[in-house]
Image 1 (cartoon, rainbow, N blue to C red):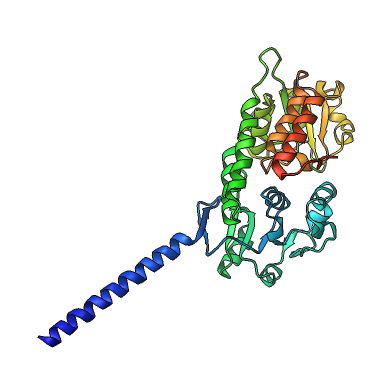
Image 2 (spheres, one colour):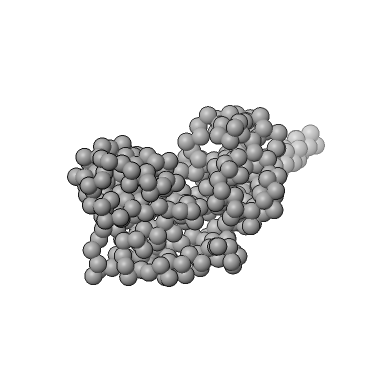
Length: 333
């Protein structure tokens, strides 16, 4: 009888111990910081990220919007090479001004995984197109949160996801609420003609554009204008005759020069060119469409398309937006 009782007590103790372990594991799991990235993958950290490597300039920008720049231990070398990006971010972080944050890259373009590992990050931020580096880093046990910036919804969700992992979820939600409210204000003026916009890719690639369903298409539509390119393609290459057929009211350039269009003889007779309706997004940093600043891209297009939205109103909106996005005043020149 005593033996049976002892066995029962031992079994009960083991059962209680197992239950306690399960509760502890459950509590530990619940205490983890987690967020789903652009792949739909849940990234789980034991605590908010303290050492972050960021592999694209746009994502560096958003980390500073979240007021988490002090967590960054590695950035792409392009941040130092892009004049307007470097100038602006230098105002927010003396380490960038002094170019003292590590750049784990080969020649500014290719990522050096060994250099990333040496920085001992607890989180890496990159775009989901960076497949090779993502696989290598995750195989080494380094958590990677990916972005797609496909559209308004994904940009908002990915910012909140990143904010969650950095312990800045409330700040991310504050930014999203502001941008969402601004976007909802941008209905096309009913008494003004909706214009067609042709967008040309950077570095003088005038015959490369963005089709329907792309991020640029979204920003153009938000402005109240229409994308002149009707193709359901991310980045179609077209001929001059096609642009004549589409007959855009204006042409917008990104990281290019006006002469890249005006020097093309094959476009000299295009009405938008003859009427000097070619504009450059310059400097490009305030209008980066891969971030929540797609809203400012749309506002700039709106100013070019609708006379009722004046330069004075655009400048006021820009000043307010930068104060809201970065939490500081006087950042715009």
